[in-house]
Length: 301
Image (cartoon, one colour):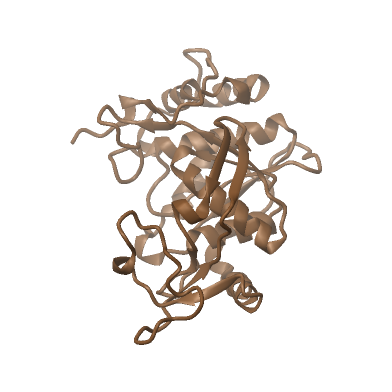
């Protein structure tokens, strides 16, 4: 894929980080457009990262398909694509560092050992109980409030002890947890703003805490509404969203921009709509609700 012809300013770096579990769909198009347009509005860099660290869920060929769709839309990234599957040593190094600093610990609990609600009670924080073997690594969380202001959703306060407890950063199968990999790579790529859907809003406080434990800069966050079908399911790979490659690209881009509150002109080809959006994009227009019904691209059940 080609590079942007823009001259990125030092300072702002955004990203789009899809998982290769299927083709680019309407829900992911919204995140790709939003993050791309915000980066161009800021005259900054736009990175693309393929989050391929969960082999059992990956679909062969989907990473290449996603990148091809982005290129077809004219969403050109800056620099090379980062593949998380090539970053194993970096994740292992961070886990080792956190264990040595006693900011993390080995845990012998499985999911069935957690109380109703799934909040980890700290069972192994001071040592694994007799009869259990180490399975995963958890990051210690503080019993105080983490406060952040999302650029779309406003100010939120969360106490991780109450909502999730000490959370997993290295899974029992030896793979890095999502929370670890995304923070390590956002720091590595110098990401200054994370623009993504509301389905990941609940991860934000954990990621802020992990950034702080690593001493890396905490990016700004912006969470856009999710596109959902009439029955309330997120339009994605699991719930019948048609791949972008099977749609009228202009219609898909128009509706994505409309969902993002941008009032795009009708009857324009996809490339003209994106050109229009680069000149007219305003993050302040994005609705702050969690989801918006978008039945036009849902597969019939």
